Image 1 (cartoon, helix red, strand yellow):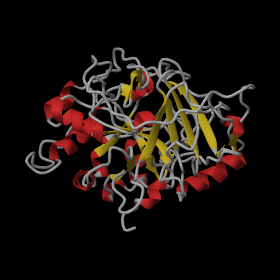
Image 2 (cartoon, rainbow, N blue to C red):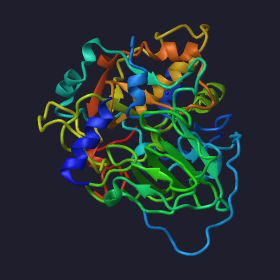
Image 3 (cartoon, rainbow, N blue to C red):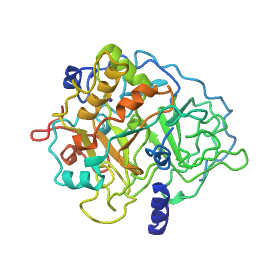
Image 4 (cartoon, one colour):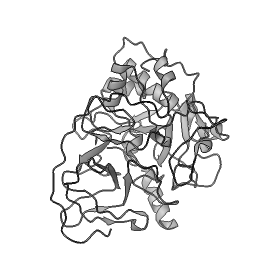
Length: 395
């Protein structure tokens, strides 16, 4: 988008152990294992972060396919958390060698790690789960709708059409919108075609039969490592897909039951970012060129010295669930993907998150993290494929 549009959108943006041994075996490209138990996946985002502040195009011609309603999804135990899409067991959550699915626990610390942490007030801030119960209203989190190729495709009118995949999109009245149909904020809509393993993501999605609209949109082949064109936004400020970075309670429950780790990075936000992006991000929405500000795409991990075993008592409600999340953060970390409140990390709205677990996750200190340098894993600037080599180890 043009610089002015980028600035306008940037301003708009600001408004997982069970035992330590589980963490130790987590790895990139690990063999397939069973998956989480559950559910409809559903939504969170740019403005959603503010809700949780503590205290506070062209389309193909011809007739469109017949509509088919989205259905509630039951996740099979044969799925692999972080490597397949809950609700679409035949679809990978991008290839196993994708950077989202890579263990970064052994990578070197980034040169500007300390400065980036200071810029995010890490010394006095705790991580904040940007998901959970919302009394009397639509639960916090980002929803995902699963459809098939039978779903009707529509033309969408985009505000930022120049950096948008024009579609058409399987967008309809059955599509779940972040925060609910009448919500303000980011209004993310994530849709997975389980027949074709295609991911559609919309920002500022607003459906109407006469004129469906969105701020921007991106379409992803879940079997491919291909990134968006350099400089392009997506439904996320970093030009990244949102779905692979979402926590899901079904994954946590599965990991506790099986003793096997969750294998994917988590999406999070920062109030101030640099006007730059690093691989695998493709777009920036920053507030200056200072090297002391983290760029979009920056990767952070929980330090190996953090006492996961002592975080809480295993007999306490949801303690083992919280340790699963901590192990995920140590091995797969967080990817800076958007502007929002510092250290807010995102998850799905369904299955709904228990209050007890959400409260435990609010006790994770940001000062226990460090930024890592992932550049040595890059195979191509235009690909999310990650490859280890001597001097560049993965966990």
